[in-house]
Image (tube, rainbow, N blue to C red):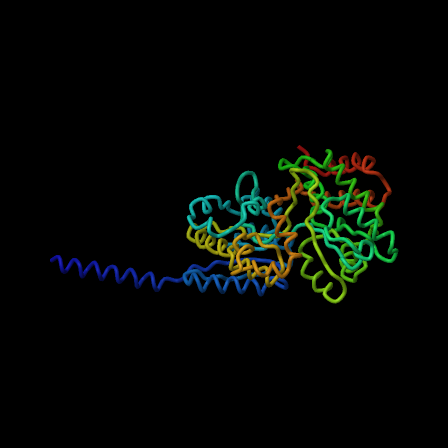
Length: 422
């Protein structure tokens, strides 16, 4: 009898194993944007993940060209109940809006219950980019931030003996003045303020002076000392010889060797490096930290969980975790040039340690990661209009039409008029 029970148990177990073996793998739909830029990288990550997790199939879906288009696609899909299970390429400010609408699931429980999470290597500071009202609403994947680029060929014409590059705005403007004094055919300094999303570089100035543009409650925060200091820097740009040209014109001029100092996004580093190879020596430094508590707003993107299915949520977590791990982050950097958020990847020769030894210009952004925090979204439905209003006021200061003290009250008035009415 005992033997019969044992045989029966064995048959049941065998049947269970056969059933599990024949079970269909979980299929995850992973949406993303920027296929023209990131498609090859996404395919590599998905293929490697599926090789390691044969029970999970990744179906990549690219149906948006950029972050705004992706946000609109997610909002439409939420209405039609056709959301993917995971969405990559989600810009950090957009995560806040999606979290407020309950479209994405906070992932704190997955982080807390995963004993392998600490081994993944995501920098603690990088997680600040995906925090909203005390919850972790996604995982950071890549970061971009404002850094300072130098055309050393032009700089050394003015200061042949220079070794250490500036660390603060006074030193930057002094160096720009040296260039301006000996070379009238180039622009001494260019600051990309005009077309950026949610006035990103104006946020960078406010953050670096210890302030903010809006607080987490949607109240104006740029009207204090930090905001006045920020406008003061913009005024010094105009006085220092910056010509008010578009972002495209500015980046093209820098690549052509016609600008000595360029303050812009770290995402341009790869294209700037390629352009500089045959023209000039390129160097970079971090964006100046003008207050002890100075921070930087993070550009870039991450992954969010949009599935409501518990079984798929666990599979989605495994994919998201792999996508921010050292192997995937190495693929990201080598195929896109973005700044990674994984300390294991950046610090180990097995991954990117040796890569950064040969490309020190990338370290200006990598070393700034501890300073980043999320940029607060502009409140209400008028975010785009507020961005334009702020930009126009900044332009008045850069072009020296008005002083910071003249401009600030009007900027506060015009932005206030666009805020939600209680």
